[in-house]
Length: 100
Image (cartoon, rainbow, N blue to C red; front, side, top):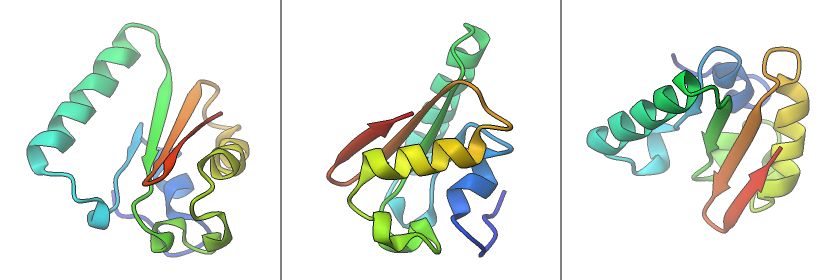
């Protein structure tokens, strides 16, 4: 599912699926498949998690001020997704991760 160009793209994608991987993330097709399978297995096991990999400021859409602030972005994104997702949210950026 392509991300829309409004707001922050991850919220558009994660409203519908468990994984947001932008094209500039440098993840191979094999790695994408492995991560997707891991998230499907987590869901089958009752562990609800959504994952956003943020590789560059452009992946944040209109909230680029949250670049290199994975915890702050996780809180922002978690609030945006709160109507459609009640489980864990993991945000991964080059300098760390954030959980909501």
